[in-house]
Length: 96
Image (cartoon, rainbow, N blue to C red; front, side, top):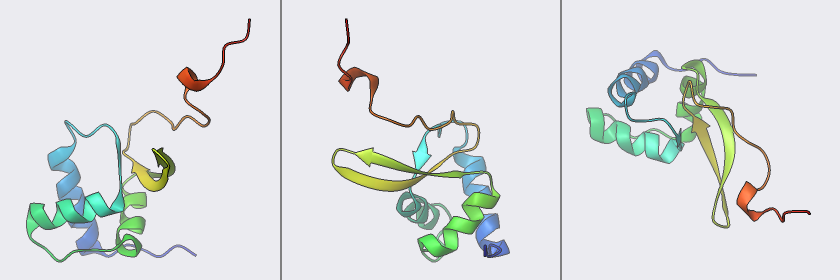
């Protein structure tokens, strides 16, 4: 069962998204989002359980990414191309 996001958190995220929209065209993590919110408006830090429902309501899509050997839960910003599944094309062997 999905919970409804707190209206204050939703408002804080909307203001942040409105400020960073022109240059943010990639995925964001909840840790990055929480740190940026604290720097942006000076409010209290939030955890992933508080940010997740609000991000989903704003149109972000959850994805699982690999950075090196680590797997990271991230959120695709609204309007980003869909996440591609599989290995990077450069690492696949070419068949002749």
